[in-house]
Amino acid sequence: MTDIRLSVLILVAVLWAGLPGPPAPAAETPSGSWDESRLGRTRFGEWLGGPTFAKEDLKGNVIVVELWGRHCPRCTVAFPAMVALNARYGSQGVIVIGAHSQDGTKEEVMSAAHAKGATFTIVKGVRIPDDDTRLLPRVYVFDHRGDVAFNGLPDGAMGAAVAAAV
Image (cartoon, rainbow, N blue to C red):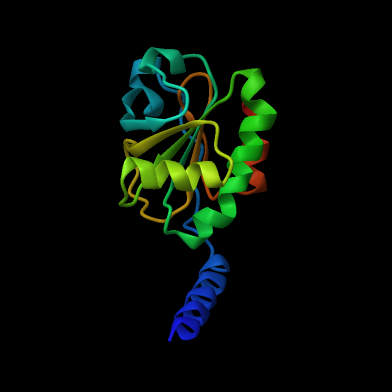
């Protein structure tokens, strides 16, 4: 029975990985002030681990927020890209935040994050204004003004958006 479940899980993961995500929205019009920006209006859930931050610490920085889940096969595959992005750009002031969006205790979530090499901040969920996406994983790259520079799957386009924003 376990072999059948594993086979079905692998089949679902492979098929799901091949599905395109929803189209990314058009480029955002720059906001008037940081507090009015999408990042300024974003609400982060409870801090679970990694470096702590105050909302004011985010101003003027490039911020990468990944919505992920420990039970999500695509998230498990994509998580190393966030670890690599943090290693590459963390010293340049890019702040990476993993927003866990599924169930689990703090210990379970942090165990999953550490097993994948996370050294960045992990929070329990995030509320990004005007975001109705339920597809995981999902990445937002916010520029130094707090506006969305990228909204999509954690792939090469994400890395290019971070490089352009830095």
